[in-house]
Image (cartoon, rainbow, N blue to C red):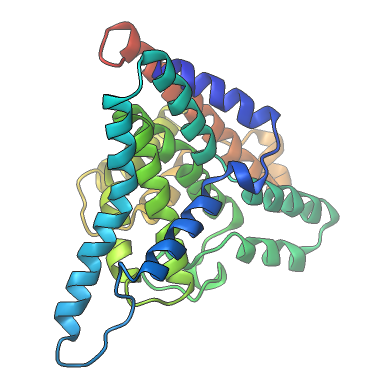
Length: 301
C-alpha cells in the first residue's frame, strides 16, 4: 500500500500544479494560530525568576502539540478506517505533505536569470529560498553561509521530498504529518526569531539525523561513489554536525559533471543546480526501488 501511495502521489505531484489548499504550509499555519489563540503554548517568558522553567515547559508543550495531530491521525487509522480507506487517507495526506510549489517556482526563475547572465537576480533568488532554519547561526542569506543555490536547493529538495518519503515509509501518514508540521513550525519560529526556535531546532536535528544519512547514501549510490563514500563515512556517526552540512557536503562530492557541463559551469550558474536536481531525482528513484524491494520481501505493508 505504501509503495502504491508513493508512486501515485509522486506522479500526481509532477503533473498537477498545487494550490495553497493542497499544501501542508497552509494547515500548519492554521494549527499554530489555533495553539496561540487558545494559549496552549507559552511563547514569551513573563519574568526573569522563572525564565528557565517556563522555557522548558514551553519546549515540552511544543513537542507535545507537534506530535498530537500525528497521534490523532494514527488513532483514526487504527480504530476507524479499513485497509482501503486508509490507503486513500494516506495518499491524500502524503500528497498534501510532499513537494513545495514555491520552491519549484523559485528554481524556474533562477534558471531563467542564469540563462540571461543576471547574477544579481540569481543571488536574489538564492536568498529567497530561505536560509534561516538551515543553520544554527544564520542571518537568513546564502552569502554568509557560503552555500550555493544548488547546495541549498539540494537541502530543500531533501526536506520536501526525501525526508517526507522516508518518514512516510517508516510511520505512514502520521510520520509524514509529524515531520512536515515540525519542519514548518521550525521555519516559522526561526523567521520570527522566537525564543522556542532553539528547542525546535533540536527537534529537527533528531528528526533529520537518520533520514539525511539515508538520503546522502542514496546520493553517493546514484552519483560519484568512490569520492562521496569517505565523506559519508566521516559523518555517519557524528552527533555535532548539522544535517544541512552533512547533506550538502556529501552531495557536492557525489555530483558528477559531464565534460560539457564542466566546461559550461564557469560560464552558467544554472549548471550546478541542474546537476544536483538530477542527482536528487535519481535518489528519489533509488528510494522507490528500495521500498519496492522491502515490500516484495514482506518488510513493508
